[in-house]
Image (cartoon, rainbow, N blue to C red; front, side, top):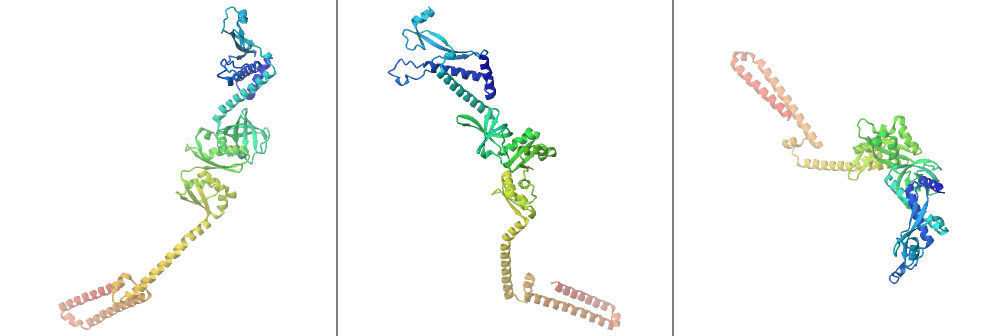
Amino acid sequence: MNREFIEALNLLKKERGIDTETLLEAIEEALVAAYRREFVIRIKDRDRGERQEDEFEEERDDGITAHIDRETGEMRVYQPITVVEEVEDPNSEISLEEALALSDELELGDQLVREVDPADFGRLAAQTAKSVINQRLSQAEKERIHEEFSDRVGGLATGVVQRKDRSEVTVDIDRAEAVLPYSQQSKLDNYRFNQRMRFFILKVDERRNRPIVIVSRSHPDLVRRIFEQEAPEIGSGVVEIVSIAREAGSRTKMAVISNDPNVDPVGACVGQRGMRVQAVIDELNGEKIDIIAWDPDVQTYVSNALSPAKVIRVILEEEEKSARVIVADHQLSLAIGKEGQNARLAAKLTGWKIDIKSESQYREMIEATWLPGFDEAVAADEAERYDLEEGFEEDFDPADETLLEATGPVGEREAIDFFDNLEQALDDIADDESTVEEVEDFADEDEAEIYEDEAETDDEAEAETDDEELAEEEVVEELEN
């Protein structure tokens, strides 16, 4: 029997994960409770007048102990007995006469220890022992689960699916019962019986006074923890996952950065021939994963986040923390994604509000914004010019050349006057040229006279030449003006 008892303890230890010493202490407590239940030991209230309401309470400090031999499994219960003159409770007291029969050295007030064999306990005592053992085991298991899983919250655990109902899935994780709520499930998972899966530990809770571990298959950090196991660069900290945006069962976007310039962060996550990212996709039952490079420049980061769409331009509004993204017309549907999923995940990933416009939409928006103001500006400019022309016609004096030089030809009448003055200037130039020719003819006819008086002729020719040059300079100056 003792050998079977030790084997049962070992099986219980393996099943519940509770230390053998804890199990033995629980059984010893159960034996003490069973003995009290069997022999109905009550508090001996000496002063009944002051504490009558405690008359029938069990005495907690009665000195009863139990011991189980760790090697043989033998059980013993020990109860102290007090030597009294008159016995009131035969279960805890002994008369002086009976005590002296056992030993001549005993006196009133001395205590003896009586050994009790648990085999003498009745059915009620056995039920009490069973109840105490179960309670103590539950408490020990609760302490173990809290101690073990409290430090693992936010981590990854491998579990085996035990059963599935409409609202939740029960999973066995390291000898602990875990629950996968409906809100934490992925629509791509089947949760077949005895299926091994990896779960993200959310928290440790209690249900019906039993510890329970809440796990998740839809949390974004599930992808993070799986990548840490699949990619050594992430686990060692060389590659860092900056942000993750996920819609479980459909698509995940992940931004990564490398702390080593020689390591490509995206390539480290994808792996050779895509083996690493494919392992994560298989664990998530086919969920799509987009891996992008994080960039400190917000415009570049937003552009990368909308991958696989090609972005033409990103316009930021810092105060509202929003970004307007311009893409080609044929890239608009790809940038937005099915039911807006790509844009929605990109906004979650970057933390910026994203408004996506095609080139044609952006052009129409610019035109609608600026054309009314442009038309108003043109109309105002034309009105101002019209007022200026009317004022110029009223105040203009053709004889006032200074005003003409300052303003130039403004209206149609002024332009005609300008060209008339120009023609008059050209006519004056032509008249000056004919005058020069007449002087030359006159010089030919009087050639002899000029030869007779050479000095005088030279002086006159010089004077005439100076006059001609002066006349030409005046004509050119007038033409230029």
